[in-house]
Image 1 (cartoon, one colour):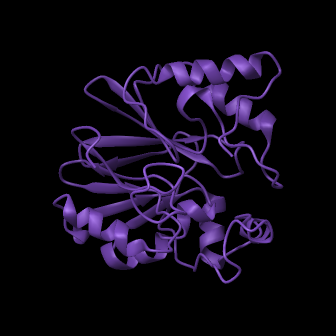
Image 2 (cartoon, rainbow, N blue to C red):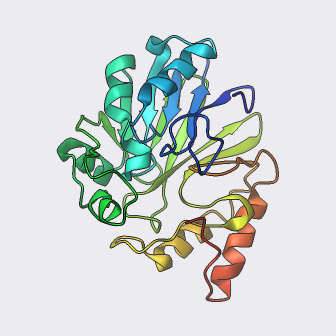
Length: 246
């Protein structure tokens, strides 16, 4: 599904467009011309659907150079191993996501509590694979015509990154689970969800003047995306929490 001249939606679950497996987050493909990147990997339950969508929009699997991961929750990293094996993409992630993927860490990814809560099948696992490039706040990675800047945005969980870039004066954010349409957030009762850090991360976005927000779930925002940041911050500013999508 083509969203802009350079961005496609190639995966999305029940909290989005129901394009692929029910458990998947929104998965995007960024066409940088000479290089191509995927943002987030889905849950890995039916990764072949995401791979097929890459080919259906006219790309070869070997065209994918990078896989950017916003954070280490299962619905965002479960497909990383399969995507890496089938495309040869270099995985870009935070240090915590690197450790989760390296060891298949169910505690720091909150898969253990998610299973107990009935959110994932008991036999589900994310698998293990290597992260090629570990990034921190303000680090930049070039993807063909674009330079993606990693922004540290914890709150929904530790090790959360958002990826920011500019195209033809328009400002884009692959926001993972930082913020959503109408300023909603994703808060949940897990050990590393921290509402204070989440508010600080939203505040950090206040001066970006975003045009396009590409979140990890629900609808994309293709114009005036800064309004989502402002609306979310208006709750925190009053010492309140924005509505949660969870």
